Structures are given as structure tokens and as C-alpha cells.
Length: 412
Image (cartoon, rainbow, N blue to C red; front, side, top):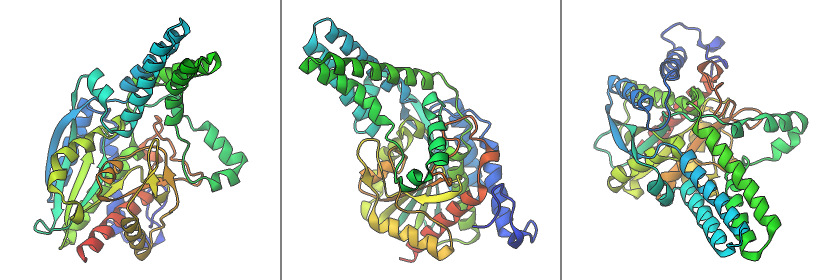
């Protein structure tokens, strides 16, 4: 990768406007700066407007691009908040002597939260939250007759902020105990405490442990407060999460227009409602997976790729880590090495991205993210996730890596 942290080319890239690095960096910046001011909460009018702007960009680059709308609930805060409240109610009911009822109610809340955050059936969300519509951009380029298909994924919606996303503890740990950070191979499991509350209420009520039930009650109240906090917040600008991925998709479309690829059909998918726990890509899957054979389809997901150091995730999952396809990970890593693009391996995520959906359905899937020198995603879900805080050279590296993967798959 070339270029400085602010996106200005280095000494090797001062040949003027025709220089490819300068051109691509300008394109990346223009995409991010156009979309970042638009409030893009899942299922919002802003998300729909952003999708239409992305469609126009891709259409202008010669892709066949459409905006598809599918049902979505818009936020995880509402269903998780309601289920946390149910666990709190279970603790109070058990405290009044109805231990069996309280234990059963809290157990159902725990199962409902687990179902929702893993995207299994999302039964509580579907029962409790009225559906809205999310907008996903689907564009096609490459060889339309090819049997091999590469789906490049990103998402254009933006998350609300919240107190739980404050990075002070991790930053302090990085300053005071860098060796601890160096040994870390995954982020903290933020969903585990949310599950622990109703689980403790259920178990404590069942065995008659007042201490355990009270601990679960406090945890449930904390989760409820966190969801209320997130639910009332506006969208952050989302420059890194995930306009960086969207910009990379646009850059790949431009590269494949200038130098067409043969032997692979490339789908460029910018999903909505990723911040509602991947509802947009689930809608894409319901519509498109039946026409995408597992044996001939690859998914490469680009999410928050502007932090400074690209990472190829080994696995991810909010409860249980699910590994990504070993052979495809190796292919992506080989493409990075061949292009001289630094790519970190060995890290896992206790969260979830759009890549988790095709991975669950058996497709060869890989997810590329990025971290800074502290293994943090800087400004994650914070109002400071602004275009000026993006490492555009890192985004350019992700775009060039995705292009290299497309050409590698095309070559067989």
C-alpha cells in the first residue's frame, strides 16, 4: 500500500492526477465524504438515500446495479431491551415467591437473546417488532457468463453510539500493559454479560439462591439501560464502519471496468441493516442464495477496513466462534502477499459481521477488517468515526486485495 494516513500519496505517487494511487485515493475519499453526512440508521430514509447514491456510482462505472428492499426490524436494541426487561420481571416475580414462573420466564428471555444475536430464527424480534424495509445495493460486473461467482460484501448503514462502546479501558490497557494487548487474539465478548443476566436469574430462581438471582437482576438492569441508551442515539457518521468497505467496493468496480476480468462473475453487494445484526444480508440471502451454488461461489466481506492494519479474521461469532473457510483464507492471504499488502492473521472477533451469514450457509467465506496498533477499531460506534479519521491507504489496500482475489478466482 502507498500513501500517507491522510490519503496523500507518498514520494512514489506524485506523478499527478493520472497516477493510479492518487486517482484511487481521490475516489475513496469522495465516496466516504459524500455518504458520511447522511444519517443512515438501519431501515431509515437516510439508509435508502445512501443506497441510491451507491447504486448511481456503480451504475456509472458500467455495473448493472439495483436497489433491493427486504423486510427488517431496524435495531437489535429494541428486541434485546425487551428480553432483558423480561428477565428483570422474572427476577421480581421469583422474589415474590413464584420461583418456577420467574425461572421459566428468565430462561425464555435468555434463549430469545441467544437466538437474536446469533441470527438463528430471531423469533422474539419478529414477534415483538413491526417490520420495516431495508435497502441493499446489488451490482454485477466481470464475466456475466462465468460459472464462478465472487460476492464482495460491505454495508452502508451506520450504527448508533452508546456508553458501552467507550474505548477508555482498552486504551488504558494498551498504554499500561502493552504485552497483554499483544497476547490478545480476540475482542472481549460483549454479548456474554447480556446473556449472563437472564441465565443467572433463571438458575438462581430455580435453586433458591437469592444472591445469584440478585446478581442476574442487576446484570439485566444494566443490559436494559444499555439498550435504552443505544436505542435513543442517532447514527454515527460511520466513515470506517462501514463506508470504508463501500468505498473499496466502488474502487474495485472501477478497476474491473478499466481492466475487465474473465472467468468470474463479480457481485458487489452493499447491504443495509448490518447494524441490526445483519438483517440486510439475510434478506439478500433469502433472495439470492438459491441461485448461488455453494460449490462455485465465494464471499469476501470488507468491514471497517480503514483503521491502519488489515486483518483477515480466522473466526467470529457472538457466542460461539465459527471459523471461516481455511482454503479461502489461505487464498486471500496469498493474494495479499503477492501484491505486497500487509495482512494480519490469527485474530478472531466476538462480534458478528455480514460475512457470518454466508459462512453459516456453507459458502467459502472470508472477512477482512482492520485494527490500529492497539488492536482497536478506532472510533468504533462513536461520533468521531469521521472521514478525516480514516486511513485511506488502508482502504486502498483492501480494495486492491479484493481485486486480486477476483482475478485469482477467475484464473482458476
